[in-house]
Image (cartoon, rainbow, N blue to C red; front, side, top):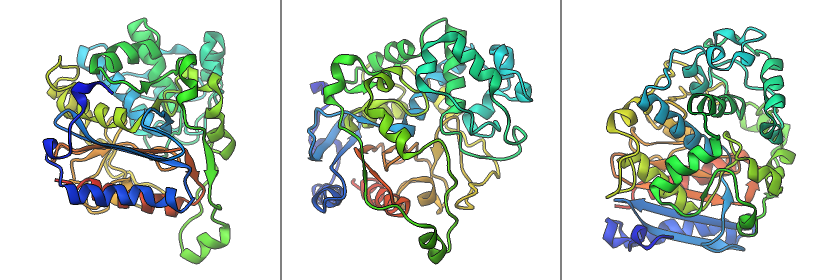
Length: 383
């Protein structure tokens, strides 16, 4: 990590005893043998004051961050709103004509970011992204699950493929190259990759599944609905051990990062860029992008309002733990978690940002969720 981004906990206002409590909590599942490794980073005032790795990995290790990638892809899209090259109310098919089939010709750009576009289950093989003709065939074949704008249903990858496509068509540049030059290089962050170079594969922690899955009887006993089957299967998770998949830079879930890179990325989203360097996102852009636009739409699993801004979740009310935040996060905190328990957020109220990653994909979603809330609750209260 670049030395300019390194600080002691005290230098960025963190309490030593609280930091120790956080690290003990992160280390717990590794010591118990549930997770093969875990990595945590806390940043504030543009610098990382906490960066530790436990288990079979080091601080040089990179991790697949899965859907935490959506904040990166979305932040790339924010740059087009900022430049005036993209509008929320534009019809996607006006930008990508091949997409305007099977009733999809009414979907707006805003609905892509909010997961209200109506095509959550659209199939797309990651390596198809590398073939322009195959991409267009996929877009044309996709069908709607429900009327666009009528409800919220999480789109694991489909809407982000379209946002990346829009970025390419409006800028004339490759999506992976755009993210690298306009975000990663301008922030100056190491260990930040959307589209992993081949020579870095040996730094990525190998994914594996951890623990036993919950059964239908477990869900019934607890009185909670069983999650629906989606494209996020155990096979799909492990596919990110394949260098060919890592190289694609899947916009909805394919970034490879360190926890420190995540924490510094969110410092960029809190401050508009790296502290002391050029502004990437203007204050007005960040205010626009972090505005909750999902209205009364609820998550069908939790029954809680989703509080979605443009590609990120905002903590909001006292139900924020259902949205992937800690109880002590402020209502303004924003971010996006990832499959297997990856955590990524920034909190404007304290200036703290956090990245947490593991290569152990916990098969028990309740245990995974409780772990994330516990870690975030301690991390949000480190001052």
